Length: 337
Image (cartoon, rainbow, N blue to C red; front, side, top):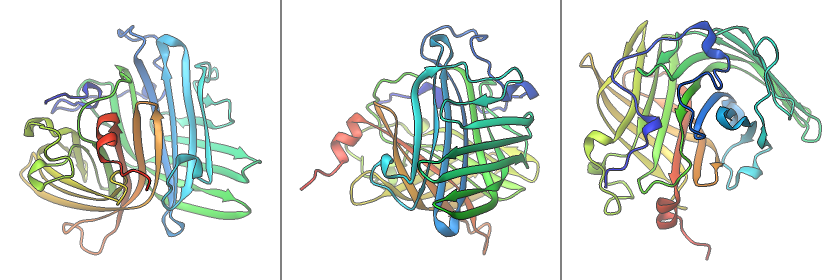
């Protein structure tokens, strides 16, 4: 079995962006299939309270549709509606942009691109849930762009405040955003192991984003169920180090999961950058929410605390987002007794 997910793949080179890439590309793309999508993603967190927030806007331009919203939660949740806030709209028109290209969703979430590709303000208020968010994200690193010029990640400084049930949760930390457009994203199931997207920042000068599947030599829980060639394990990966963007020469990672057989608890990543340096990143997921981002997929979204022997005494923060499909979940999810 060697099935792959094409929209997660990257070439080994880097692409370029323009200041227009914060704004909706929409139907002005060569891809005219209904599966073509466009996305924006930001996160926010306050680690002492184990508060984790997740913002996602996902359009199908050729269908004139938008799915978008946000959730925020404290600690681990068994069900995404257990989040202290969960407010998504699945089927709305993609008429979410004002004349300047800023975003406003039906639920009141607003994104103002104050300085395109460098600074955005995000606000949201929900009286019924006693929840509000006011945040500014400012770029501290350039965008790291896939070679197809259709996807990038970027390390930002997120400064703002959540108010929940009368209590303030102020934050000032590093967060890695994600942006994609112009590619098909099929919703079918995949008979493959979980795919894990992991990122972290240790400083304004060092960050990483690594995605792929577990190394079968480390005996993950799916050994014997799937056969994935080693050259298919890594999907997309980069390290940013003091102004230098690096791809990975090799990757070996393992994700340990909870007793339910699904929820990621920790990641251990060993990799070699294309300049020959070795890195190890060890991540503990301290807050997570199992979101059905679409009905054929389960995405465990989690705030992750990272350590590394390359950064003794320094704590990094970032995300673990692991996507699982029907075949894996049916085989590994423990039944209710």
